[in-house]
Length: 198
Image 1 (spheres, rainbow, N blue to C red):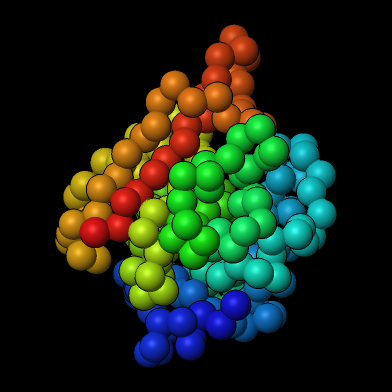
Image 2: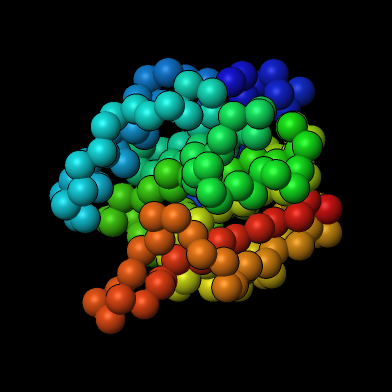
């Protein structure tokens, strides 16, 4: 995916203080470092082995957060193009209700734990909305923990003026999500998020 050409202008860059910047980029080296970061965090902190790349990496837009040339966070945006989105299965199809090219999924959002207090996850989400506006997406879907979804919602209401100010953020409760995370009491702690781009 060509992040530069899709926006019709220079890649969006959002400065966090003076040291961390967030941008959608075509830089293959940054893509690789982002994928290495998400693999290593899954390995070290969640004891889950994931491959460096999956079936959606090459067809997705990639956003990275960097500090002093080190990738400290990132996410990807995958557009529905008749193939299943990353979260979908044959029995769980949010794309059934939409036209090709109308929706996208934000997935694989990761932030290095040392930078977890820098609002990077929230800013990645907001930067993704800007990209969606630039490329003509009507809806963004994502899966997050219920706690993170609530934090996104609060942050979004406070800072949505950074984009159009007209988009609508909602948490779709009561939907059975495949691969949903459960807590130690076996209660679902994952939420499906939808942003209608305004």
